[in-house]
Length: 229
Image (cartoon, rainbow, N blue to C red):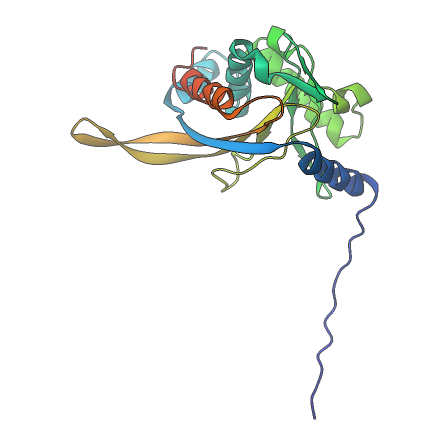
């Protein structure tokens, strides 16, 4: 006689906030011509700046400093800072930086820091922390949730080194930040260990081609590797 084993399963309906996220992710992949470039950046200078800030009484995170590097690089690459609205690409001088925030209950928000390019690094940190706190208490505004000209998604505290982020449409691009890993690098006749972080830029090929997107990512790596507080 065959004995059948009955197993229990959990069904999670895609509705409410989770359903909205699912719909937005599906629409993003359906509507945008997405391509991802991957790179690695030497974090030595940026980590030294972090230590310098801490010594001066400013406790800034790696993400805060990377936000600053992204903003500086975007100012030199305005063709990737903006939104695709229908059959038009809308570019802007202002950097309204979206920050992906993981929330309890398998939820995700990516509100924008408006006018991020006009903020100092401590001001950026304060603005990011304010967004996180208000996201956790469901107090974000509609403009914050739907605005933004560029988004970053940070998985640097996980074991993920590089990944393929999905564009927060209608924005043109999103940057994924991976874990920093000590990596052996040849220095003349010697091999030294340096901290490298994985960076993944997903962009909408309708708005920008591969070469200028690669130039942005290359310049971002240089900005990080020559980071000046």
